[in-house]
Length: 111
Length: 118
Image 1 (tube, rainbow over the protein chains, first blue to last red):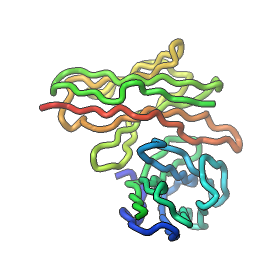
Image 2 (image 1 turned 90 degrees about the vertical axis):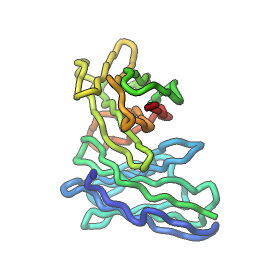
Image 3 (image 1 turned 120 degrees about the vertical axis):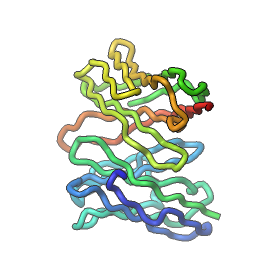
Image 4 (image 1 turned 45 degrees about the horizontal axis):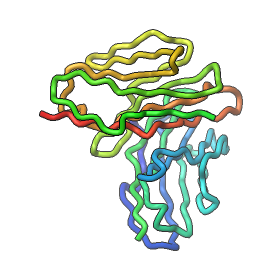
């Protein structure tokens, strides 16, 4: 158990819908990262937050957004969903510039 | 740009054999970190090791060992006396060392699926 929690574990929704994925980092970790794992793209970095502020952006679509709240939990919002958004979404957390520990992931299926 | 190459897509070995997973990386940074993560069939990503670019010492942890060679930009992972529980997908990853406001994202290889045959 990495100490990072993610909810829900599974999400099934339809095209055009909007979903929110939630992540609670390990106690004491200020950085939260979001990654997407899909069959065709592999594991890709989406976005990083540090202590409530966006720190870095990767290959994140404009339809996707994230935020980190004062209690350090983070949410990833995915809107106007397409079939190609089906993937495993991971959250990771770290103490600054240290190892990233990953949550169990949320498996999103868009039908 | 950073890049991690895991040329071995799938490997199968019989239990108790030794197996080496290859990882080659590219980066323009002089300071960086290398990682290995394990993804068992249950799907989570499990951290195995972190190595910084200053430290080329090989590391051994039980049946696992890692060989970091800066001269060939490689960070290979060996499992000795493999067991069925080692069956998983293994990812090598690279990140820039932290600098103020820097991007600590992990760049992953495509993974090697290891199957241990009982």
